[in-house]
Every structure is written in C-alpha cells, then in structure tokens.
Amino acid sequence: MSLNATATPGYGFAPAGSTAGAGARDASDPHAFLYPHHAPDVARALIATAQALVSPRGVGIYATDETPDGIGARLAAADKEAQIHTEWSDEQKRDRRRRWREFYSLGALRSLLPRLYYNINPYISGVILHYETLVDFQLAPLLTARGIIPGVRADTDSHPLPISPGEPATQGLDDLLPRLQTAYAAGARFTKWRAPLLLTASSLPSQAALEAQAEALARFAAVSQQAGLVPIVEPDVDFGGDASLARSVEIHARALALIYARCAAYGVLLEGTLLKPSFPQPGTGHPARATTAPADVAQATLAVLARAVPAGVAGVVFLSGGLPDATAAAYLQAANALLSASQDGKPGGKREYARVPPLTFSFGRGLQGDAMVKWAAGDEAGARAVFRARAEELSRAAKGEPL
Image (cartoon, rainbow, N blue to C red; front, side, top):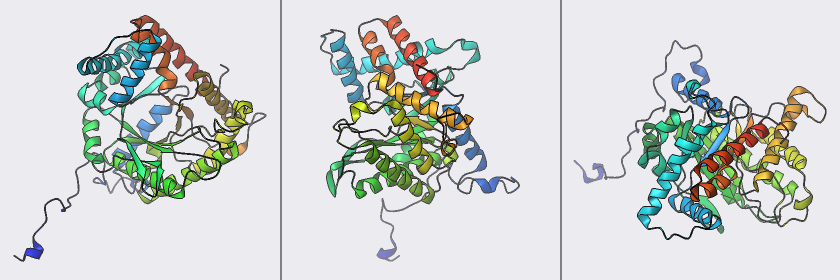
C-alpha cells in the first residue's frame, strides 16, 4: 500500500450515531416530506417537547445553568446578604452546590405542584441545568417525576473574537454531539446556547460578531436536534451601553435575521426550537432609559419578533439579563398584554403582531435570587414561599394579566 493512501489517525470521518440524525424514513408516511432532515417520529417528538415548554400559557422555564464557579459566586453573595461568614472548602462548596440543586428539585419546585397525583406543574415547564447537575448529580429523574422537562446548558465559555478582541465569541461546538448524547441519556430533552452581543450607540456589535454568533447558534441548533434535543437559541444583546431603543431594535432584528438564515442553511426544524432573546431596550447609559415605559419596550419587542422570527418557531422565552425583578416582570406582562390585544382585535393591538409565537420567561436570577438568600440562611420554608410567589407573578405576566 502506498504511504499516501495510509489513513492518518484523527483525520478520518465516520457518521456519528445519533438519536435523531437523518434516520430511516417511512416511505409510506404521507407527511414525511414535512421533515426533510429528520425522521418523522423524531421531528414529532421535538415539536411536542418545544410546545410543552411554552404551553399552556403561563408556564415558563427556570434557568439554573450557572457554572460551578458561577453558582458558587451567587451562593457567596447570598451568604453575604444573609450575614453568613463561613469559609467553605472546595469539597464543601461542591456539596452546597449539590444541596442547592436538590433543594429546587425536591423542595422549591415540588411546592409549586397543586397535586402530585396530576404530575403537572402550573408555573414551571422546564429547568435548564448545568452539565454537572445533570450528569454528576443526576437530578433529571427528580424533575421528570414532577412533570418538569429537564434541559442542559450546551455552551462552555466565551473567548475574544479574533478580529474584534473586545467582543465575545461562544465556545463548545467541537465536542458538542457526544456531550449532548450523554445529556439525552441522562434525561435531558432540551438544551440552550447563549451568544452574548455587546451593543453601543454606533460601533458595536461588529458585523463579524453578529455573523460568528449566528453561525454558532445555528450549528448548535442542528447538532442538538441530531441528538434528539430541542435547542433554545439565546442571542443575549447587552443593554449596559449607550444605545437608544431604536438602535436596540435595529440590532435585535439584524441578529435574528442572520440566525434564522443560518438555521435554514443547516436544516434546523424551526417547529422544534425556541428563541431566548433579551428585551429590546435603551442602554443604561442612554438618557431615555429612565423614561422608557414597559409599554414602549413591549412595542419594540413585538415589532422585532414580528419582523424577524419565522412563524414556525414554537415559542419565545425571554431572559431576564440582570434586570431588576419588577422590571423584568413588567416587560414580560406588557409584551403579553399587547400580544393578547393584537390577537383578540382589541384597541391598542396591531394585526401584524398577532402571529408572534407564545411569549414566556426563562429566568434564573429573576426567579431564584430571594429564595437563594433565604436558603443560605437555613430558612427552606421561606425560600419555597418566595420562589412560589415569584413563579406565580411571572406566570401572570406570561398571560398578560395585571401584576
């Protein structure tokens, strides 16, 4: 054999096994043409999971997918607020992470169930877990037993964008398929990838950042569906700069248009996906921020979604992004009230907004902050009570009901 014909280890390629993939298609299925890149049974499962995460109206997702260092920092902040001054060892820190994760699985979320017999949850449809929580702590079965769909964070970290080092680019694609196959085997049924975008009045984000993050999100979505998991694409547009509301609307719409163009190129089944955007809003350094009402943010939000999100997308689950709890709830309520008025033909609504997908929440800090402080102080009953109260408030907001 010629040396030139000898395979080089590490450079070969064989199609990886997957849960979904381009599995065998039943030629007799009259609807197989609807899913050109997915086996029909897998496509139907993805669609069913995506719809279950946003329906009935009023349910939302609890995002508790912080890294070990991230959740450690939040627990440390909760300790400080609760006036606890203990120095924890690395092993104790890991144990606290596990106990906090078990608390919301066994305690806080269970307290939301009106009757365990019905195996449903009136406020929380799914929980986004960190890989450690899903695979090492193995908490997915506890959630599934309570009628809650487990999910997992798929991105790993960010690195500086080479052409624009001040902007982040998200990592995690190289070993994504095997990690998500492991997550599926551990009980996850959906996954999420965050792509942060910096925003200023004129220079940011760069076109390179918009395109890099859109490409990463689309590849993530395609690989997730290959593994049998519903992808949540999260373009997180920063609001810490000096951008106006109009500038925020412009960048949100441009980012979404690029994302869905790349999703089409990768054959992503949109009906089996969710979108997790930020609310278009003026930056904290813009003079109009203090006078911008939730109704203004609602108009901006629905305009962006109506213009840039394909009708096939199953739902929109907003991130809180560090907003104050009351502000995040007010924005969500105003957007849903406008959507209801648009769909019902009531005054103030707009026909072009009527086709916007269901709108709900996927909050972390905006849901767990007060509960974590009480838990750190040893008040588990109080933690359950404030978690439930916050979940109820967000459920009302997701229905467009007054807060």
